[in-house]
View 1: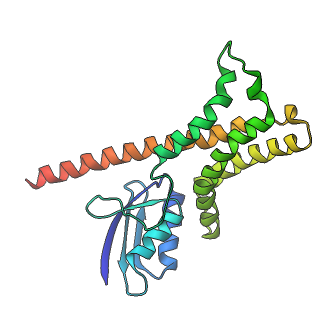
View 2: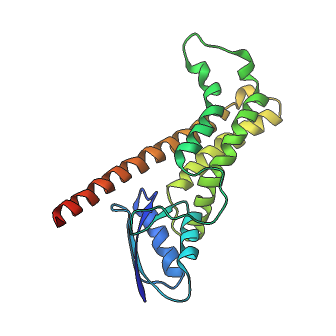
View 3: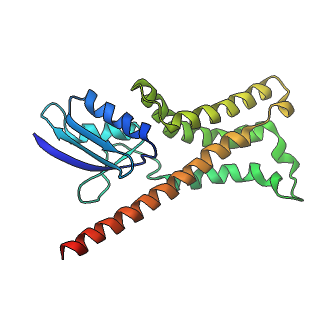
Length: 214
């Protein structure tokens, strides 16, 4: 058996680690150890499954594999966005106009149109559910719900509530599209900041290890 040691980007709580550990164990891997604090994952690789298959499975859970050399693995799937920063920028472009009314003295009546807000929110909601939604569903199916379940429920509740109001012609009482878009957009920003913080910490630790070896 081959011993594999990876860094898993995107783990933010113990449930994240449990989700990944349960997935690896279900694939028949042995000596599985996952630690969300250090973003570490180790296991014994057998001949029943390949590295690329494991990487793709972890990617589907909403996390990213970094190999022993510190390089992010390139899962062979076509993706529109490569990281959380790109997702944030895309979502922010559509979310920002809906938040303008929060600025004192700024009121653009056209932006209060529920169908315009629906059109602005829909791209954000699709991108958000493609990431958070898939991760949430996969984690629930694995029996260990992660933080993305809360994000998915919050954004979906606001979106569906607003859509219902729009369809029955009472949007003024149900207009929370900007809430759904803001939840998704801000969490993408938070995830990117968290990833950068982890990368900086890990780089500093690697540098410290190299210095001590010298």
